Length: 237
Image 1: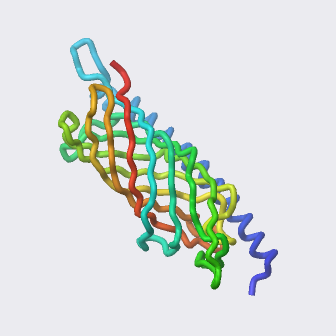
Image 2: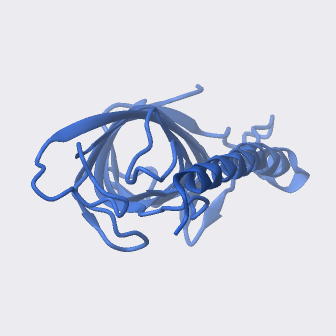
Image 3: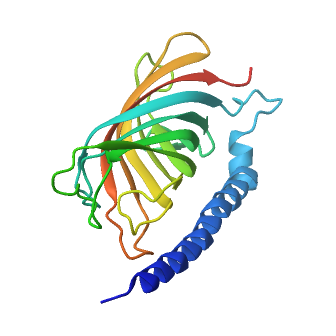
């Protein structure tokens, strides 16, 4: 059996390892974005010119979402709910693919509230005889993201989206031997509808996953059934 000191040492070592991974995650998107946005092939295809080419389109959105249960896809934790508020930036950086407009997506979530049992074991399950709940406050960033949006000039614009990043909670979440920092991933789709020349409303569903990537003694992870909505504003002229 491992002692408490050994487990704590393992957790500390794991979090140091996680911090190194997160540094890579945060710098990698900047490198990729710089390569794609300034490489001649993409720049010449996207930038506006005197000949009348379309300018690069971008938009910023305020988004909010909440979960309605959890599913067991890549993780096994449950009995928790998540609610988020944040901002998303979308930029038509990569032309078209499968007849869809391909956008870069970046998201900042200054509010990520996790509702979970007040008392639970190492496996994330509530302790027998306990019914209390608690709110865990966190924040997150997803600097890596891609959106495929079809029919961008129609009244209803379906899209698929994927995002990846990190979350940080004030306390350890999902397990007493888990971490403050976790990797996050969202995969889903939705529909966007213009309500004015610059404003759009969107509504979607995603699998919202987060876990610590098995870098510590415990990694229950969780997959939320996550519904989200937002109001976006088109930038530029």
